[in-house]
Image 1: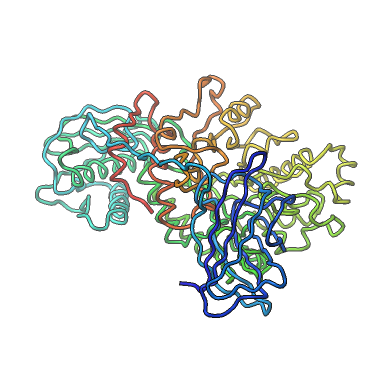
Image 2: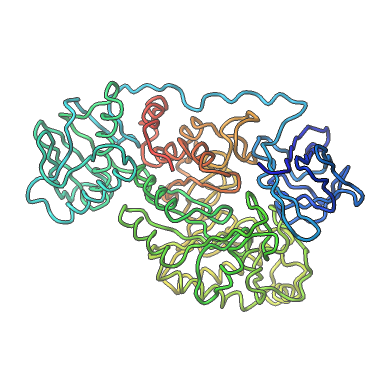
Length: 636
């Protein structure tokens, strides 16, 4: 327990985003004076605000530092209270308050401060409803995502499954990989598979069948064996995962779920892009957590891991040519170049992935049929890179001439600084040996409307190239980046704003529609390949209910698991997306995820709901069936 405690409450005020009240309690035996209060919060104080009882000394995005009056001394047992009206947004949930807090004394010592959730004053916060109904499964088989078709008859539960004699080595290897996956996800259970024959088990015979579609599989159950037919490695792997799921469900809830003795399953994915994004910039996840998440993706038959490696908060990827990117850009703290953000405290917090870490993660994902798509977020969201490499900045550009939506000043790479392209070329070259997949994601989102307008170099570039405004400048920049990736044999993926200002060459470009559900249709009509990931349905940092007590973000409203499950990304105009919609993707943004408990509450079961939407045809989905099966699925 710290010697100081901070309570924060919010109350609505007509005509504004409300008022925050901060109360700092001195629980120590000594009087407190000559200090400042530092905290991080997504509910940022706006430039125009009124503070009663204190003053804002410094703000960097989510980091705030407030001062009391010079003469203030807080006696033991006393408190300092101040209020702020003039906020960037209206908080909707308990997690919109303080995420870290501490005191800074005149001698630069930092003292920890305890804090709690944001309290609500003057309004009923409501009660969060149950996130999952009891559920009901008409057919007693635990499969998720639900297959394209099945006709099964339940029978006795086998002790285990094992490969038939004379099984090919590549099939034995696939068997072993899914066995290891099962043991990692359910370490307390008996193994689902055995590599040799077992009394009471059932053998699995593998058949290569060229007439089966890519990524598809068929399972035929008889009293003596199971026949798994597929045309490729992916289909075989998905069939084995389905067998492991069937066995797990029958073991975990034998009253409700059974293992088939007779019948068939024919299955194939609805979309070829079934993705999950993870932001590791706002919050660093150790390698073990990333590997665990990839295991969970594979269990849910997701095949894309979109790894958001850089942002304003931090640069998390080792680039050997520019060690400053991690020596500076991966270190957050009051005495570092990057101020603390989200849940970071005054002590320096550092974290990044070495290139050996990346190779391990990419190889692990590949063994499970998951492609890793790296994201280097440019030109916006680049505060960490700009803090690390001053040569990226136009020295004549006015400081604090624009702000990003998250409150960062001058956070976009400058399209008129030629070193920008040398820097990116070097970064891409090092990434080439780390990420063998076809796509590099370059962000392209949320560049501030006033970006670069105070840069003399950009003004000259705009005049020379006849560019009108920041959107056209971004298009110029991204066209060059598109060409750089093409020269390296890679395709450009980005957020939907890549299309702004004239966009880029549609050939070899994949855009993710996140701002609104109809954006994806507009992009498809403009000729882009599209992945649908609307914040209103597929952003897993969004709160799951309207109640104040529910954790999560609120800018896209709230998204109960049932809404995520039932949402159909193609909408009412699937013909408008024909041939252009590659698939769908979940997004995990880490700013509102303060702990593993928050991660598991926000991400699950909605990640599995998106996995089913990505795999299972709309007319085969069933919310009640999903609700009863997903309770048995793994979490982080």
